[in-house]
Length: 307
Image: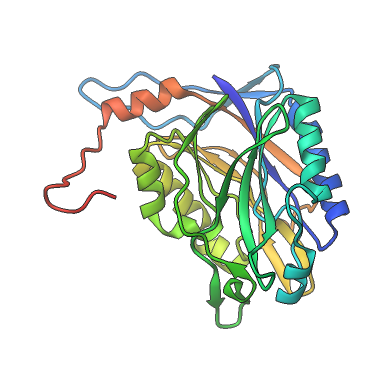
């Protein structure tokens, strides 16, 4: 089994401040001193894999192998214009360069959400990058589904005003923690992406996010567990938490869900604390294979199209 850490922070419009928060999370991941041992009882006669018991035992272990950070970890601006103004190419961004240095020195893979300038300079890309343990950016995914919402008595957010939509699903790729497929925040509501990643044998699917409080309270955990259950994959969801500015508050509750749909690591909301936090869990690929073997999800592609 391999240990991963999911990180939670409250990004502001200051890249330097946000880098310092992420550096704290890197240190916490490297120094993670406990792991979760899940007690799984034997299946009943003739039955399938039982639900994972919620009792947990903690014991010393080594550091995490990978750290998963939220969407827009580099900054969350107070307006569409500021969002575009703050974006920098990855090779010039002090935030990205700082995390590459941390990954290289800590021998830690880092998955982090950032902004990049879009062609033409009028919008940005909402991007998720994979920085490997040597500090190299080896994968890049651009968010496909943009968050345009106007909730009665709630927030009004129009991501499409400042963000260019992505046009392709990035195939899963091999990492020290397993075969990873990338998605971002609002992509969570569209199972087509996760099902496509599962068909390509993704073992871990990420959803770094900045959910609003109303939508988070209503849907966050339900959606994450649903994606894990239907793909029989680990779901890792690093979340922004707390008040970024007077106009925007994020829900938090970062979590890791196993292939049986059990939440195996979870953090609180931003109202509890806006200090950077991590939670750790084991990625047990033997459990994943057991779930897939005992309950094969065979698609009826003679009836409906393959995704």
